[in-house]
Image (tube, rainbow, N blue to C red):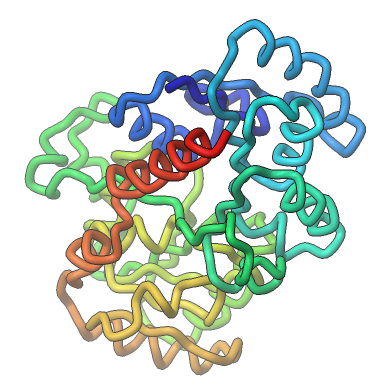
Length: 321
């Protein structure tokens, strides 16, 4: 089965796309799909629309069985580029949560052969809960190697063990912030305000690290803190679960669904930094690894499991064509 992946171009990332899309594509290839990318390189609405002729040419020449687009504007462009090849559209959160973008996503939803949403909240906002050709399929995660195996690998001429010790300040508890400090949507100011109520705690920015380094931090930090103003199905939470890292989060996206009842993890309903600080105290006192990895498998959220579900969607669509 030939699948053309349509997504925005990220020039500094492997294969030109964000990690969770690339990892899903790798899992689809492992399921036997032949996948190629079509990257939309220009920004803004006109930039996306200008990609239509090139995408039509790619579809005509490569002859995919399915076009799978990611994010609302890419989904709309994919549908406008072809009506002969079925389009599967995946919406990742901001394309539904942001009203100015949702109108374009809503048009793509009506045109697509199948719509994939990463959270129930997004499905509800898009009015897709009752649609027949819609599915809730959060993006999956790769299950990392156990820490004892991972730290034997080389990173920047140092072992991961030495590297992570250089990042973490000694004699402190370590809180890993779920994003970059310059990303306003992640609300770093709320995270900093919460940590300010605690003593001897280092707040670590999650920015500029490769996959092994991220896993190393998640294996060694005491807790992951997520304070985002809006999310779909945040990958960072699932990645932390896969590493057994305790989690404190505001009630956003599908975080509550993922970690509810998981010992060492806490979802805070308010955005009061004092409430977050109290939850952080509990998570820091946990002093162990959660059973998040087992929860990921139970929920069918490994990339292998997610890819198998997506292939079934492709097969169902092609059976109806």
